[in-house]
Length: 136
Image 1 (spheres, rainbow, N blue to C red):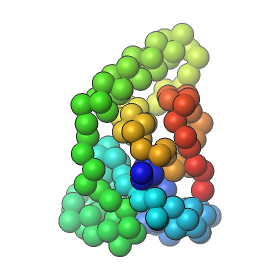
Image 2: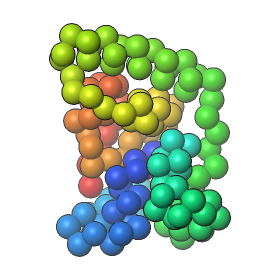
Image 3: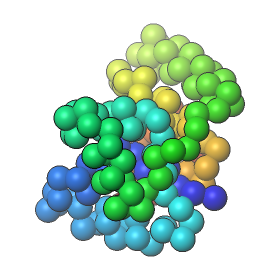
């Protein structure tokens, strides 16, 4: 079963960030045999990086051996619904910081895979504590 790659890690590859790209590349290469995919939310988040050119984004992801065609399931929607409710309830109690809904969607999607490769593990841990996380 594949690992879901978070937007932060894809951006490391895309920008060639000297601080983060080497570790992100090594982390992904170590998991190529398991398979690598992104969530539909990550594909959307990558839009500005490619000037809205979906074909360019798909070509880049293909060159990085990261799949971009996994479907969003009804189970993903149900889990995201529950996670967003729980997150908002904690936020109203001031026990968590503000986070975008995209992280909830990515966590819900990753919930049916091996886990998530991200540089933002604390954010995802607060959303879905049982989700296996790998930090490059």
